[in-house]
Length: 193
Image (cartoon, rainbow, N blue to C red):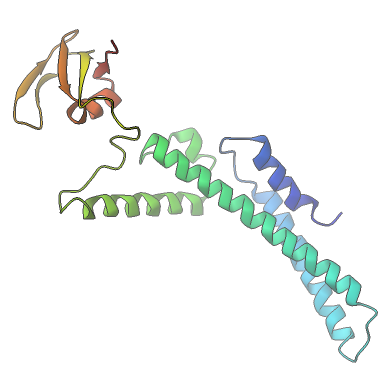
């Protein structure tokens, strides 16, 4: 039946809420179907150029299927890009290998360009200092947090110029902005009271 392969792409998006390998083969089949429908329409249009109307219904049907297939392909690709964008905001600029293996080359290129655009934007705002958009995804409850050091780290200089010695199992009361990267790296852990 016409349009089944394109509908299969949309159904696959609905079944999974994570990024699956791109369906190249199914997309190629949809493009081949679209090409065949377009060529049939071209033949029927040239056959009816003398004023016949016997092919108008078939031409209209094939044209509607072409438009539907195009919408399905575009929706599939758009939703994949939205998932990749959400992965960028969730995981940061480096992709996990299992996610990268699910992406096409053009999606990897889009991801790289998206990273570059975000980095350029973050550098351009904040009066030349820059602003890290990923620092506080949720508004902090307080500017200072209590942290415990999980490993020997050594001297750590805070943003106000003070030096703190981070030794294993030591606890500190630091500014959230100073220690967020160390928390993400697994050097510190946030102690909730």
